[in-house]
Amino acid sequence: MLSLIIAILVWIIVANVDDYTTTKQISGIQIEFTNGDAITEKNKVYEVPDGTTIDIVVKGRRSVVEKLTNEDFKAVADLSKMSVTNAVAINVSAVSSYVAKELTISYTDNAINVAVEDKLEKQLPITVRAKSDVADGYAIRNKTASPNLITVKGAESVVNTIEEVVVDVDVKGASSSLSAYATPVFLDKSGDEIDSSKFDYDVKEVEVSVEVLKTKELDVRVKTTGEPKAGYAIASVDYQPTSILVVGEAADLAKVDEVVIDDIDVTDRAKDLETPITLADYLPSGITLAEDTQEVMVKVAIEKVEEKTLVINADEINIVGKSDDLNYDFTQNISYTLKVKGLSQDLENLKVTNLIPSIDVTGYGAGTYKFTVSFKELKGIEILDSIETELEITQIQ
Image (cartoon, rainbow, N blue to C red; front, side, top):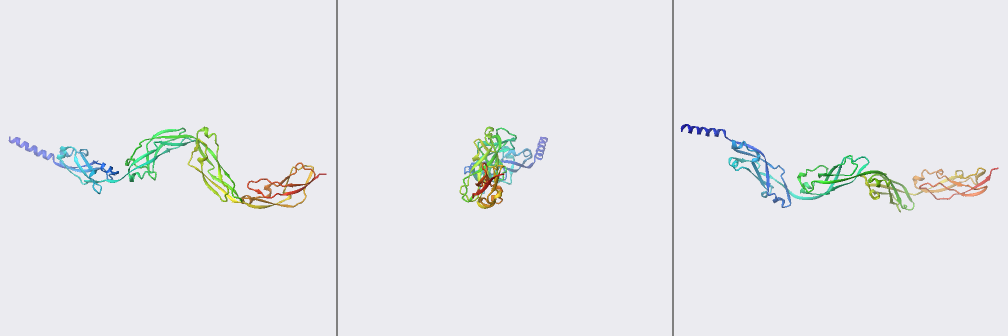
């Protein structure tokens, strides 16, 4: 009996020495947030900015403590009991009731701060963004997304940072239309991507259609209508670009070689006209622009008309249609004055020789005749006078 009692005592002593009381830190216990509808029912959203895990220290018998992990504990934060400062108490307990009886649990951070703000719902268009380039001689005419609108819900401060929603499609080397599926990408004002896990959105995948057609370069021609105010004239018509790249079906492209803008009205104007012209308004059906340029900038320079007096000597008048057996002599070797009208830039270097003054004696025999001098028509120059000269025609002996 004495031996048995001594053995029991030894066992108890050894067991207590081997299974001593110890402590252990358990990290990364996930916090469960309950009763969130207490916030969301008020059309608000919440976020935990400082993380959603908690660390604890447990104390108990070594045989129990050494086997414990963060999965043996649960942490609960009841959002319906949030304080006026948006702090929520955290209650940590062991999952097993047996373990709970064996341990003492302590933790420093017994509350967590919750950020609460108004909930915002926003509808945004979806833009298709082509990556890379299509084949040479081809261009994209249309890019469509289906659906083309997306609804975003979340914290007001987050949703308001979304400037654009895009879907990317790879069109490298494409020479025909194509379709694909793509995931929406959310961008801020700087074009940087926003983490979509911070809000909810209703469209997770978008069907994208890209119309790829042949291109053609067309000349641009500008024409004016009407006349400037009396005493004024068009000095120049300048515009850019002078050619554009268009896209369309091959049959439609074959029918057009230029774009004519023919309604620039200068009626009764006495000063320059500058105006942007929308190119799409002048393109034939089935043809659209294949580049970013959407307008032609037109400038019509209008200047006041001036007069200039030229002196024409008789020997500067050309005699046309002469016969080899006749002599031709002006009866008077005098000078004539000729008034002309035009823009200063046209009058500045105008000479008599430019007008090629002439008379036509075809069919005239010997005798004295009066002829009206004719002049070459020059663009922008108006002849204001009429000159008459007398010519004596005699037979060569």
